[in-house]
Length: 565
Image (cartoon, rainbow, N blue to C red):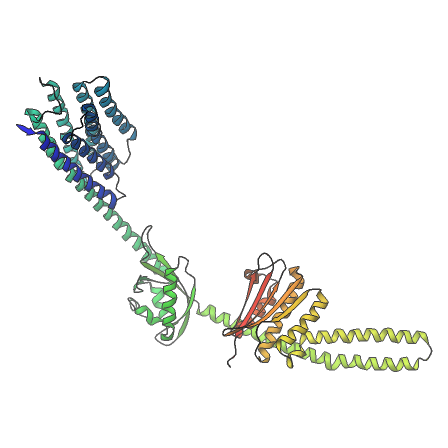
């Protein structure tokens, strides 16, 4: 049997290049499967070796290196890939030893001691060791779907190893010295190359089939794991105390738990698809959808409060939060939304708010009553006492002691009248009844600055409209509370009060240069005054915020909706 060497090497080079493409593709699209990258490298070594034989280099020593080194380490890389694919534990030390042996043998028997027989014997040992290691690893595959394929792969590598040893024995025993320049391969040598070609044609598809079996096993394992996880999720969701529904990326509901159906008052399955929108009042649906879209785009979705309307017409309040469901490296394609029925909590809060507003009303009524009593009763009595003192001083004549006593008592009574007038104004500011808000605030700020030593500026960035009595009083109480807090706690030297008209709302900011507080400080036990102000503004449709200034200081901002023109 005679084979033309160049034709054979061309076929082997093309098959090696095809194997490189196949295994490289597997490595690219199945990166979690270890092994194919080494198989691609092994096939590349074979293709490089045979290409160098087809196009020999002018220096036979360099040609020997380019052919023999890749040709010998290809099986070693194949063994490295098999140890990772089947064995799981890489045998890096043995692989490095065999690679070093192949390179050393080629260099030594080419340059130091040019001996073809010794080189062939040494490289055949390295190749046989690589094939033998691959056989040993594949043959130990445990019982399962891939065991038969593993055994067939092991047999192909065993045939490759036997063929390599047999060809080496033939070359060593041949009476004619072997050389690359031999145009034809004869006898047992040609038979060995035919076996090599057949085994190479079988081994690559067998390895691809082994990868396919491994992928199927992984998919089956992942499917079982997913089904188990889904079962656990449904079990937990069924027993959860909050409503749960899952939507896809287009907003279609794919799962609901019984608690959500109970909250919505709908039959099981009625909220699947786009039916979940039926749980909300029609006028609220655009806001719900817009909030949902914004939430699923965000990595940190916020908690939102919505109304749910049951088929009976009953309105329930719910608090919801969407969470993206995704695995690492994949896009978010499902969203789980938890829904908590807070109707009773909200009703309790509304009752507490109503009670707080009632208490504030009672407090204002009491302040008005006390201010009226002080002004019409005690103040009048003190004025009468002043008149009596004046008459007594006039009758004292030249008695210096009586005159002095009258003067001392008169000064004390005048001080009491001044303090009483200040207390009365604090309880019920008379200036609010007939002065604009900014003027009343300016007068109070001037008086407060004299008592506290603070520098207080009042600005009107844009003219305030005429406000009703309740709104003016709430703004004024906010100034009182904020200035009192600054004087007591802030250690500030300067305060600025700024009233401005913004689009659709009226705002007032009180900023200082003190030590600073933040919005979360409203929850402290000593912040009851600011909390009361916050509730009063909330009752008017406005709000209160506390912001820490940089580098120091605090801004207390209040606002209400602007009155209709």
